[in-house]
Image 1 (cartoon, rainbow, N blue to C red):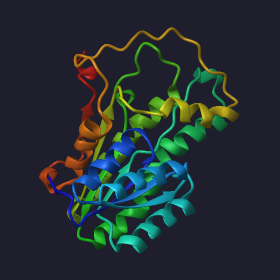
Image 2: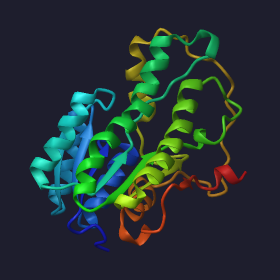
Image 3: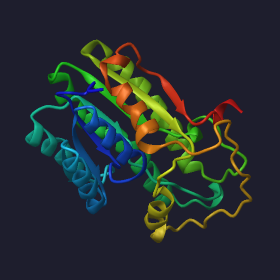
Length: 261
């Protein structure tokens, strides 16, 4: 399918995991992709994959918690492709720790990436999307946006993932009349992800003691992890496309049935 032919989409956290899968699928469906990642070499590697397959993409270095970098990310994408029709606000990190031991610095860090980041990306992507006649925003939440789970002790992460669901709904209501749709997805297990590794790197300077809790094994009715390109990426591409033209303000669990258990 070429449902995204002639469309330009920015994907944050596009260098690995679900973000990489989304970039590859969007390119397969004809879209031009701004592959944004705080780790630029990862973004460049994804661009190389897309180029090798005959697609169009550019690599963008961006810390989504920093507004000047977000503004530049959008401007550089417009400079390369001329317009903007979609945003996948996927960049994220993980937080861990008991609430009474969580430092304000660490709280702000996790919310800065996971919640303020999507806000800033939407803030700067919306004007050119409206100018282009409308478009679609997909925000990556988590099953932690609905349930805390027996493991617990990750308040900053859970709050941020609850928050982006509200952000997607707010965008949907505020900008629907201008042709903008916004939805959130809730992933569970992912077959190719570096979130744990990258979050550990992010937490290298953490001042919050990591929580030590027994975490029961997750049980999924579909007893495997989701595929980053053919399942997560395909879902995101669908939500970006006109096939999802009457879907907005929704939260879609892409979780192998986790939230049904």
